[in-house]
Image (tube, rainbow, N blue to C red; front, side, top):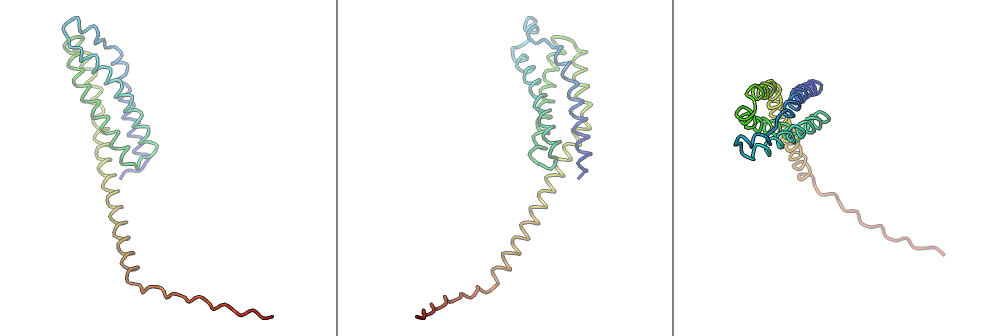
Length: 168
């Protein structure tokens, strides 16, 4: 497992690269593409890609605050993966209906995040393996404690003390 500061540094790099997509996505006009025969689905895809970018930023920030949470690591990774898939499809529309150079720029920025994505994927696997090992140790220790406790003789019950007679 890398130290937390290294994980935060990688997450910052991932978000910084992803943030470079926002102004390029802002240049797109999928509404105008419909005039050239583009399906309405590109408008929805463009909107979803922008939302996915925002969700990725939030998820990465959450992971940076608590890098030991498996669910946060998975959420960030899957959001990145989802955004990249939408971006690939959207880039095909950009290439066909707006400007191939902008499509290349979009995919170039996305590809710059490959090392960060690979780091996040490996981090997620390592984190899950670490947590799994910790749970296995805890389970083994709990089983050992149960075994020790079950072998102990039951505690002897104390008889209640007889009441003392009151003296007049």
